[in-house]
Each structure stands twice: as structure tokens, then as C-alpha cells.
Length: 255
Length: 172
Image (cartoon, rainbow over all chains, first blue to last red):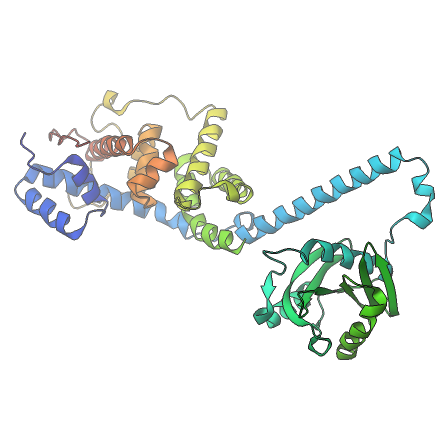
């Protein structure tokens, strides 16, 4: 049979509406002269429409919660967090078992709660994020309000982000970070010489109100305090004593 | 993370529809879609960011469905449609009568797995031929020939008689 320049693929694409307008008119002109093929193609089109109509109601059913993509994503991050904690616990056991008497040396144990723990978490996060060249913050300075609402939502209380301009440090942005005590906001600041400071804010279960405490370790200083259940820790690459006046500026804005 | 949600969420209704057409039982079908979405979320970073996310999702679902049907011991032996007497499957509709949903779903069930998958991806889920080829892991030419054969068989089943119109030559 002489099919001219129209192929079976053209007819299939015509049925599926995948031809461009010019090709459609060519196919239609050809079909007008080939009644049997016209009938076949029309039959395909009817079947296609009937199949779509028969299955279409499924796509309009309400989505069950097991298929809610937000739920799947958050279930997965909870799972990952749990796994990470299990690995961390296993490592701790391995280290503890290997060094006899470690658990007895209570004085050497890292602080587990209160503002001492917050100071440690802030220093650890500072060491990770402050030197990061590419992405020290997740939300930039222009998204300050977004960071405040994000943090307030996750900490379930209104939080403030202090302005350290008076001390010569510009707000760089911030991010949400994880701590053993739940989410915390890490706000980052940068000085004229590129020195970075960070303030970490999180809920306090212990030490709900605490005066400023200084702590320095491995060249990172921290000044930490708590007020009405919210803890703050200012950290930077300098002695805690030299950070103290900057911490005072921050605290004055929060009080 | 937000990108992922934005891409995946609108695809869920189509994934459900496709799974339902293949395995029929609604809760089994939704189980497959759930598996598919969990895999997509956990392997999101492994996909080709330049490729079609839709084709990638359907590829995951096609593979999961194949595994599930294989384990379930299938739905009984496949009967080649050519072996059936004309009109054995459905009553031939009169010219004016629209095809009923049962007729068309019953007929699509009798296609081969390969033909059914192509028909559903292209005719119902609106995948392009290239996306369908990617989802099924076959060349586009294979998609086209399965589509042509599937449509022809479906037509004959729904007509209740073989239509003896010569097919055009496929151009590779």
C-alpha cells in the first residue's frame, strides 16, 4: 500500500496529540483521502478517551496521608536523625569501653545540660559553619525576618536576633541547627576583617535563667546566658573575656 | 528539599492512577505508590537532574509493580488476544453507544504487560514517547511498536471483530 509520506508513527502521534500544527494538517489531509485509516484512527481516539475517562476518577480521589509527600519527607528525616543518634551512641560506647574508667571520671565528661552544654554546642556549630566558604548561613541577611519566623516556629516561642552593628559586626544570616536538646537558631555575624561571630539560641530546660558564663576551649571563646527559658551563647575565635562586652550589647536588646 | 516536594507532589495522583490500573486493588496500588515515593525521596540525589523527573518516578513505579506482580504469582496465565474468538470479551457496542468503563478496563487487562504499560503511560499519564521509553528502559522504537500493537488489539477487542485495515509501515 502506498502510504505516501505519512507513517504509522505519525498516526500514533496524531492520536496522542503530539504532532505540531503543520503535521496535523498534513495527516488530516491524508486521512481525508483514506477512509479506512480515518476510521481506524478515530477508533483509537475513542478508545484513548474512554480509557482516560475510565481511570480519571482515581486521580481525583483524596490523597491518603501515607502518600502525603510532606509526611514522607519528614518521616525520613526523623529516621535519619534516629540512626545518627544510634551511631553516635554506639561510638560513645566503643570509646567508653576502650578507655577503662572513663565513665568514672565525671569531671572530664562534657557538660550534658544547662548553659555549659549550650556553650559547647554553640562552639561545635561555630567550628563547622563559621569557616565555611560556600554556605556559612542558609538564610542570608536579607532574609532576617524569615529566619526569625522559622526559628520562632521551631522553638515554639518568639525569638529575637540581636544586632551587633554597634560592636562592629554585621549580620550575615543564619540557619536552624540540631542539638541534643532540640532545634536551635545559629545567627552569624562578620566583622571588618572577616572575623565571624555566632549567636546560638535554643530552649533551656535546665538553667532557665542564668547569668553570663565565660568558657574558652581550643581557641574558641563563648559567653553564655539564659533568660526566661531561652539560652543564648555568643561564640567567636577570641577569648571569652573579650567577647563579654559584645554579649552585653546582645543581651541588652533581648531583655 | 523544597524542590523535591514541589516536583513530587503533583505527580502523586497520576502515580496512583497508573498503579491502580495495573494492580486493581486500591490499597495494594497505594502501597506501591508509597514505596515508590519513599524510594524517590531517599534517592532524589541519584536522579539525573537534567532528565524528566516524571519518567524517573514512573520507572521506579514500573519496577516495583513488576516485582510485586511477579511475587504475587501473577493474575493467571496471559491469554493472547489473537486466540480468542471475536466478541468473546465484550458485547460489541452499537455505533452510538459510548464505551463503558468496564469494557475498556476489561480489555486493557487482556493486553500483554508491555503493551498495557505503554498504553497507560502514553495515553493516560501523558508521558512523551521519550519519557515512556526512559520509564520502561526500552528504545523509543519499541515504545512505538508496542503502542501500535496495543491500540490495534484494544480496538479489535472493543469492536468485537477484527478490523482488516492494513497498517502503515513504521518509519525508524
